[in-house]
Length: 500
Ligand code: MG
Image (tube, rainbow, N blue to C red; front, side, top):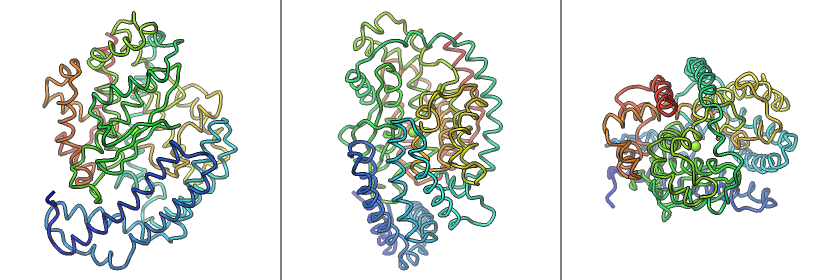
């Protein structure tokens, strides 16, 4: 296939380097994926060693002196320019870090992930505590090496996931959203009370749940020849290239929708990663514009599509055929009400669309204080419970469904959570654009025809990979800057149409 990059000698050399770096990080990504899916628990120390060596090799390749010279080149087209921008960004961060620190961080991340898994299984934070303390200390240390004047340590961490996003800006957006979400949550939890009953107290065989999930994501367009779906404690997507995108789900016999919505969510990420222009493969341009942008696509499929009347109009008969005893008599509207109950709950990933935002703001509130040292790791379980009471009015009965529920801190990804809420905001804004440009979208979904929607998203978003920054892409797609009002409007309209 013809390259879209220019034939400039220096750009060609940069592309060669970019491919090398992508291969190293791709190998690490497969090892990380394996750690969360198939690896036996006693391999944890071996795996930490392997990942740490690879992190060191990646570091050496990235910060070599001649690469710094090459990065001074001028691009001849937009692809060259994006390649230079993306490689320079990685270079500049990495070059500030001592290799020993990079290796130590990688090792500690792997160890913390393993102890988190055990701690969660046993619902005992103390198993995880010292590994998290070490990981937090290393992460803060690394951020301080990268920190620029006027940046907080948390700013540095946010910037890793969402370029240019700051603690202050996040706070401004979240502070404006919070009271609106609180009011909506109060009103809608009264209005939707009891509607979830029709799905409760039933058993759904896991093998059959898997079949349903697979059938739905196939229909969404997930390409099983360019990816696979497995089971993990915490569902995630691992993109290696357009030909290798791995997703996971989790299954609970008493909750069908948990696995179905998790599969739709991760497949939403995967469609993005499988839909990038294949000419970006093995270069720095492969991937999503940012985590927030990626999350906008997973949340889009999960919520705007996967919790809609139109979608279930087509898919409910499928799951009724699979579970005739449990769901055979259920009316479509009752079912859709049941998957759209607003109520304070313990688990973020299972939260409804309204209270979800409060789960995120809570985590933002905690982690920025964790990073600045105002909250100690040892106090996390107590702080967690106290904040849950403050934000959602409920307190978890154990640590598994409380402070240990998310994997993120075990991965050392402090500053990641805010991208989820940003993703929700972007998804709603994109949704209104789609409805304007494709007035038949809901009628298509109702017929189970998801291809026109997927194609729209591929052409307007997926194909661009990392070519544009998130802010640029949002503006290009929707015609305006990020505007949180769309999200509130969407929630109002959606719930009043389902619960009229
Ligand atoms: Mg996600």
